[in-house]
Image 1 (cartoon, helix red, strand yellow):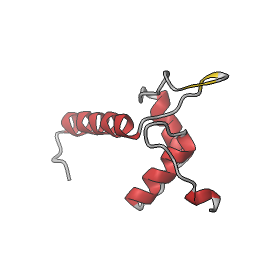
Image 2 (cartoon, one colour):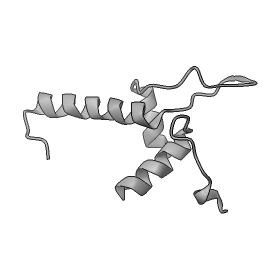
Image 3 (cartoon, rainbow, N blue to C red):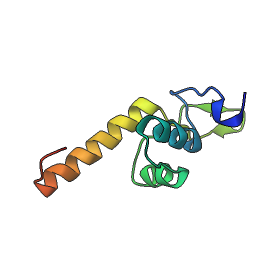
Length: 84
């Protein structure tokens, strides 16, 4: 199986895995930097996902999508524009 087809756990994604999954699902460009920017803005990180070296900062896809939806809703509300 090639690197782009490796199975991933949607409850414990790396930023790179999240970017690939979101890009494939949306048909839009999503980069690891974009996911990292969301994390830097407060997107939830799973601190309870532990490896022998400690928490590895993985993401839960459902929690990430809920956070993104909340952020987008706030932007739409502030702008007064109708949501598409």
